Amino acid sequence: MDTEPISTARLDLVPLSVTHAEEMATVLSSPALHTFTGGDPLSPDALRTRYERLIAGSSVPSVTWCNWVLRLRAESCLVGTVQATVTEAGSVADIAWVVGVPWQGRGLASEAARGLASWLARKPSVHTIAAYIHPRHGASAAVATAAGLTPSEQSQDDEIRWQRATHP
Image 1: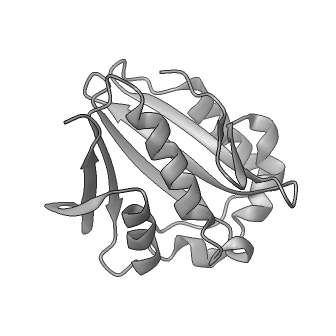
Image 2: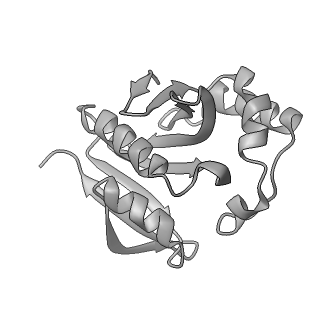
């Protein structure tokens, strides 16, 4: 599955490039972004190294990594990321999103997640879209709801699996 550009009303989801590391290090610099996921903000060099690994792809042949940065057209700047990890012969896509603190509360994560989910739903091999969300992360639960996902009974690492079927 090739990562390709996706457009929404306000955003361009641009396939990840190492050249995005410098600007994204600033976008992702707030420690508040790591409250539920752990870790610390990465330096531009560390983010560049991470992006090189992501672009190289998974070493597992049955796993595909698709990564985008979010460009807010009106401000001509990067504001976050979305990603999909496609597994099980392409039938399950686990998605995730992050929007930098200065751009939160504007519906951008919901818009990006809807755009990504719509793109994935058009892939004939993707039958399920899922996201793992911490039970106290209300903002991510709202984004998952906007993307058409609902909570399931499954959990992993204290996070609830939200999901939706793409093909009946």
